[in-house]
Image 1 (cartoon, chains in turn brown, yellow):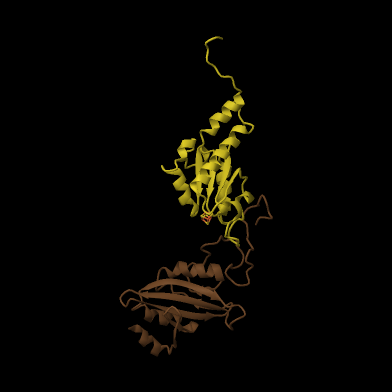
Image 2: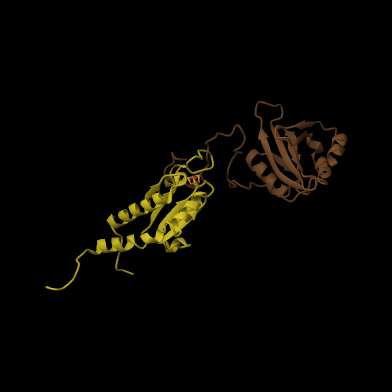
Length: 154
Length: 156
Ligand code: SF4
């Protein structure tokens, strides 16, 4: 499998998560070459998401990639720590679906992907300010697009 | 007038009676409540028994707007536009807890009750409401339509 190979090449330490999926932490600059290698066996990019560890970790965000290998019948998880204002490489040239998944991460967390062809909001409307899944975004702060009949019911 | 069969009524109540049994509805379905809306509309519960079986898929032909499912702030301008496109007389039914109060989505994305966007005539609680509740609401709406001051005119 390609896993042992990349472990050696990028000197990654494997962590077994509670759900049994092998998990790797990868420094941001190695992300693209690592994913390029992993793609040989892990053909499917299942999901890209992020976690905000505001005040808990030195680097605020963790971007999480889930890959699936159809031939090897297994999954792998790659995590990259990203500080506020830092950029991270886009995978949209490797997997087409990374385009929209990265736009979602950008929409919700404000993490920017370097080299992304079309980094716009995907779920929220363009005039929305801020990124709602950040821990410092107020839980109930809505941003209505039209004048409400009852402004107190935002 | 012996032997004649006739009824006297006012134009007002005649129109009310006619409107009550000819509800053309526009379903604005966005979420899980839609399944229950379909159940109420299908043969088992048969919303057609109450004269509300004809669904119009353009707001310009409809007179009751069924708002079924969660309405987000992103969608709010669309819902208001649909309401504005409907011709008078028109009524609005808020179908399900999400449309009544925002339901369990008490967050940045969801409108906390669609009466913040458009006026609502009948509220149906439940997540999702049972079809019986929908029919009950429909009967209440018919009662409201019958009793209210009818807007009509002979002028073209
Ligand atoms: S009220 Fe419940 S069933 Fe209806 S749309 Fe909301 S969450 Fe779904």
